[in-house]
Image (cartoon, rainbow, N blue to C red):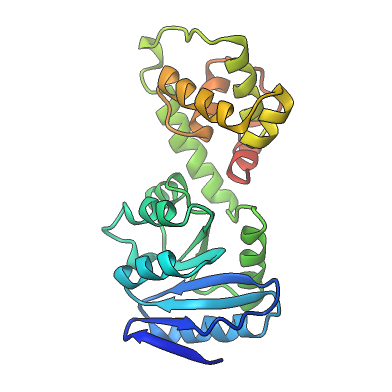
Length: 248
């Protein structure tokens, strides 16, 4: 596969993509992993590596310049740089992030998913599972292990219930309650808008107000808070709710 070297730490393809292929950027400080992963994807008709980088600076440039569907990034590049993920998502809001590492602990796992990562995988993942992960995440799903779901639920439940006794009962309108119910069902903003007969932007505006009113920061924390306070009726177990929201 022909590559055009822009700088010593970044490479971009010449633009001859496989028709309809998932475009992926590889960001890894170790060339042996980049080469190996590139070879795995080269065998797939529906995946194309469009750029490779080994530093955060070159990664920012690649994400800004090269249209891509998925970013596969080494966890080591993110250590000590917690704002990198939100920054990359501001540059390319539609890109889906997969983090690869040898040992990512509970707090790191929760933080990565909180910031918008769609999958966490091991450096020792098999080639077929790696390809399956990329395909699922590119289609809009989330790749997450059962243990990680448990960690996330515990962390979000703790945050959602912090100071519970001191909080007054929230004063929610019927529409706000309906939106919260939809969130616990794993519905996306577009689906909620259709169900409630309004626009997606209106739903986004409502959600910002709900977050501020309840003191939560995202959809999962909102759902767990609502279930804990019995603001809405639980139709399924917390873990099922978490799966639905993480995959939405």
